[in-house]
View 1 (spheres, rainbow, N blue to C red):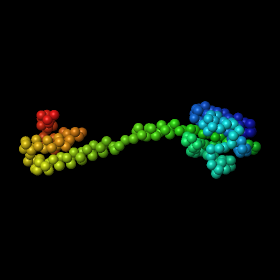
View 2 (cartoon, one colour; view 1 turned 90 degrees about the horizontal axis):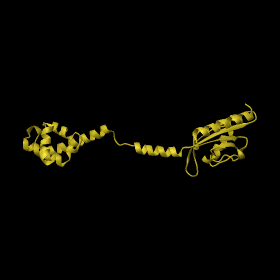
View 3 (tube, rainbow, N blue to C red; view 1 turned 60 degrees about the vertical axis):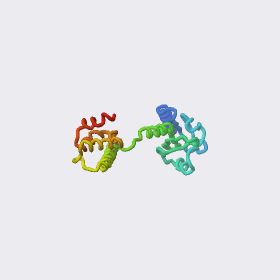
View 4 (cartoon, one colour; view 1 turned 45 degrees about the vertical axis):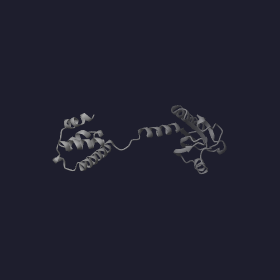
Amino acid sequence: MEKKEALEFLNRVAAGLANMFGNSCETLIHDMNNKKSSIVSIYHGQVTQRKQGESLTILGVKEVDDFFEGKDLVNCLGKMKDGRLLKSSTFHLRGDDYHYALGINYDYTHLAMAKASLEEFTAVGQPIEEAISSSGNLLQDIFDECLKIVGKPVAMFNRGDRLKMIELLMERGAFDFTKGIPIIAEKLNISRYTIYKYLKPRA
């Protein structure tokens, strides 16, 4: 490919990429044989606030050396002085009498902010299965505590014992747990209806 053809080709690619990805995507073509004024053409130069005729300014000294030696830089992180974040790549094209490089700088600051917002919005606590399991363990602890206060096993309960047990459980919020009533009914060997009957006068 002749020098003129190479430059025209790179210009079409640069213009197309800038148009495709919008104002946040800067594309530019460097003349690698001209370090002091390497930028031959640039599209959406507001991203890095550069213009045609300027030199490379956003990389460190070591990276600049690698850059001009012809090393491709792919999907690198770039940071502007104002804190904006860039995804940057550079691809080289060489010929007998030319050495060009196509640069792509995408300002993804707004996407990084959106990502942070999404991560905050989608953050959750423990799995619901664990939460239910934890509630069940706590309910069992409350039941055991009340049973100890009553002072006899469930099998020996009379009506007064059951009433006292239900009052103790209610004081400790046992019936506020999910499925608290059916669980306690099973532990007391009585029906849910019986528990509702005990609770009704106190509702």
